[in-house]
Length: 242
Image (cartoon, rainbow, N blue to C red; front, side, top):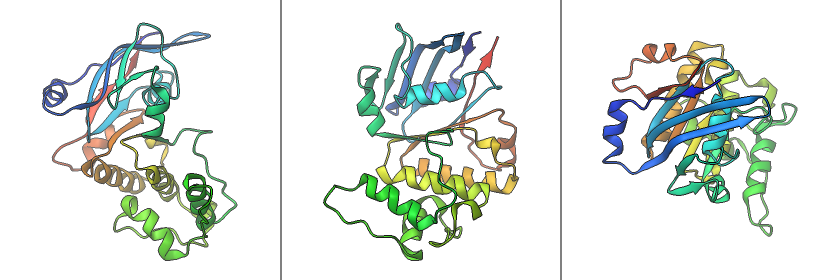
């Protein structure tokens, strides 16, 4: 099975004036059972919001993981991310990127508090000699504010399993942003069942892109984009299998 992404003409035009965050030519990935995705050609400008769509089995998750240096593409693939060639400079790209919504990669312990979750992530990122204390409501809000914006942030003592789907995903995005990534990939956004919740997440991702982070989102279809009411929609890259 092969996959193909066609870069929209307006994206190609904008990429000529904005340094691309991602440039891929003949990008492919094979697994034990054959082709996972590819060949893929795409150019993604820095600081843009982008949507990759495709049915189950089209390789969307694997593509996202490849773009952030977590999976190694086939030999002969031409891939440059954040100005670094992959897979040769995978570690450098990993340090400058974050991935959210990928099962087994950023799952949260649902039986602990939000404050404990935030502290664990901050302690992991802090120098070994720094004491990281558990945050109160204000401390949690400060971590969440770049993503939650005007929406209420989770309470410090709230258990993770008490969060609704959108708040859970937005908390994971907020934690991912603690490393100040240049590239953020978010998988399976349409797994959120609540339409208003998906809208909140899209608005948050729009804000991160406006602030300079390149954001790539994966979903099964692009149908919901027409309901956002934005004057400028995300760049759309359909990933098909045939």
